[in-house]
Image 1 (cartoon, one colour):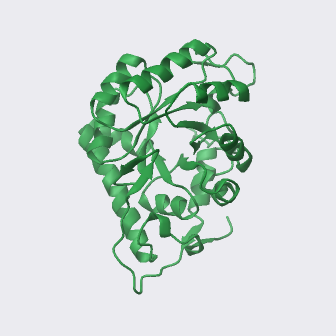
Image 2: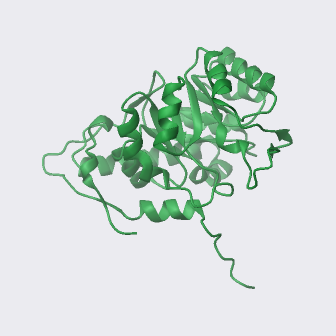
Length: 296
């Protein structure tokens, strides 16, 4: 059987290559054991490692969320109706509900209202999934038509809720500035690999984005974070948190909520080990100059 070749412009592979070409300078003399606590959307967490905005997990989205709760981590949650969201929130997890850009605006407002009514800590929109591989304006996700939202429509969604609003799919300093201008509380630097070819690695964009928006936006990096060492690099370059999906999938299936919690704690332990070795007492005092990019 012929070996399957990687797809040209595979954005996950590009992101992996970039992360592997960021070296870290040690500053352990005089270091102290660090704290990894963080604040996201007005809530405190034991770790900046969050779950990815996943959907349709066979183990159950409520089990997934329960794992985040065990690890005291934020839980991003993707597609799923209001009934499922109620079960997810009933676990006690602190949930950020990410909504697809449905062509039916009333569907979006219904989902925002459900998230607000049932206790989500924030809500947002996955704008990147409004365009398929070909721009035929007929993107369909799980049988439902999507629509590329205009800035006026995004403002309307943001103003419709008291919850902090997050845009998933921003992938430039320009997008970050636009999100801040229209009233977003945060962005998730993210791309769908099968849809976005040759995407700039999200971690590469972090310094420019942080310089452009300062502290006006919560910035979460999604896609390709494989361990706590990757998480450290992203946080050092300006992220407030990192979002993890694929590394949680098998542990979820094999161990349930305990598996999700275990992996998040392991990532956090690796992150803290990097923090102590770089003289970083807490997340706000990671010096970006410890990161040394080499040619890739």
